[in-house]
Image (cartoon, rainbow, N blue to C red; front, side):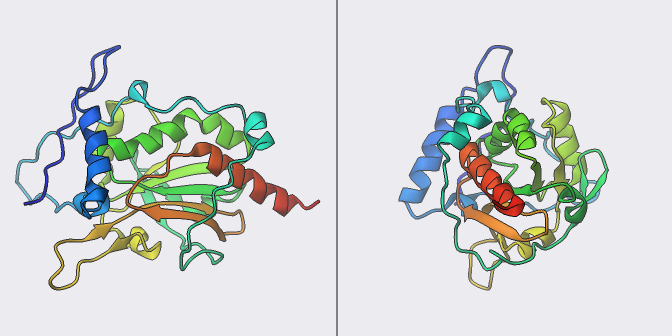
Length: 247
């Protein structure tokens, strides 16, 4: 039997979510048992017409963030956190373009997003509250991403109306939260694999990609856990911008 995800509850003002430590424990235990988080958080079936759906949980509030604020950009770049990229079939190649709708119904495409600079593209699992923390990290550090000339965009399999209800109950992120309900874009970026005969379920990975202004994928992190080291992203973005500008 698959483990059940904890139900989300919105914290009271000044309070903290009671189940966060349990979520952290689960995230540490699962890899040790050989059961990946990405295999636990799988593609959810859509509700049938006329069928009642469970209340949509809200995103966890940023006031329960377990990460300290990022330093100033100047301090980060004085001691850059240059984590090597993962090997990936798309590394150094053109990023697949996409046309997706955000939680407000606005259409976005990658070509437009990268018109003025590099883009950080994040594939996240909306059902795991711990995983969504990556979005709150980047929302908090968004001024630094803007300072280095980059944009951030997040993509999940949630339909726009579900994301909209969740975002309305939380603080706005300040960057587009896009809907890829059939995982077409996730497949194009090779972070989603449909289950084959005999396999227990679909496999959806966390993915963070840095796409240069010219559309080339310059850096990748893909795996069972979200990438939550913004100083590393900022260091890579500054390096990309510096290489583009020349000596």
